[in-house]
Image (cartoon, rainbow, N blue to C red; front, top):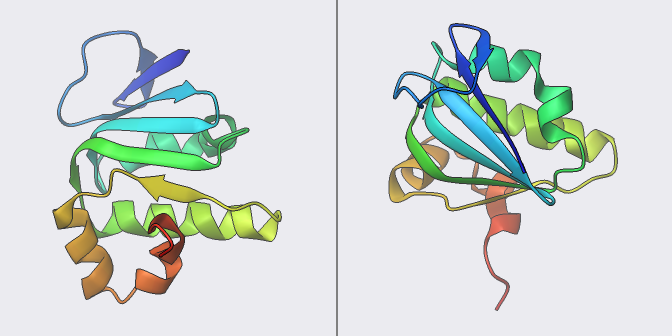
Length: 117
């Protein structure tokens, strides 16, 4: 298991600050924690290749806040994976994030996260 905390662009192993985003990789799942917004996403964007390596699911249940730039980052990640012939899903989508997805009309982009009937 690998855990990285991104705080002001510096890698550290310290306690998670609510103003940062951190991740843990476990198998093929990337677990995100903290806040994903315009102020915190740059370090994750800069390290996306390493963060997404061998990942086919991103668990967002431990994110306390996601704004529209965080949502745009998810859409970008999905698009890049699709271009490489991979499917990227998201689990743990909160009601608030689900509302943001709906407000931006991105339900079809995230449809593969819903259980099939």
